[in-house]
Amino acid sequence: MPDTSASRPRRWDASVFVAAPRERVYAYFADPVNRPEWQASLRSVELLDPGPPHPGQRWIDHVKVGPAFELQIIAMEGTSVWAEVGSTGPFTAFGTLLFEDATLGSVTGTRVTCVARVRARGPLIPLGWPATGVAALLVRNDLKRAARILASR
Image (tube, rainbow, N blue to C red; front, side):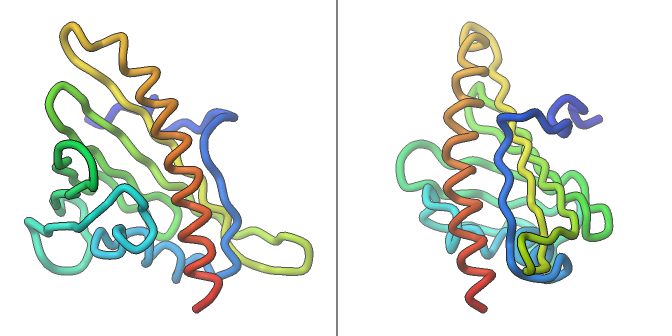
């Protein structure tokens, strides 16, 4: 069962307005193949389960610095919720993307909120909170990059 605390937004979670329709925004974020384009830390993605995005699909994020992460889609609900879990060593990361129709000024688009939580095991348990803070900063910049990419298409 997924950790439900990993999907409840808090005020520090990253959120971005994307000047594009929700269906297109959701499809872009839901497909792991697109990640290296908008996620600055990634060198490449290796799909372990090919095909269109689906719950249970697994892949490996090959990061520019540090160990690779093995990830899996754990939820896809219409065009409003997409969630993943990933791990490397003693760390497990939970990420949930929430999508909602939004308007900014006179522009109609999509509000994307990312809820990211990192948990650690064993003696590294105290590093979970700081790792979550670092992840939140990185995700904030990555979401802005994705919003620019989607708005330009």
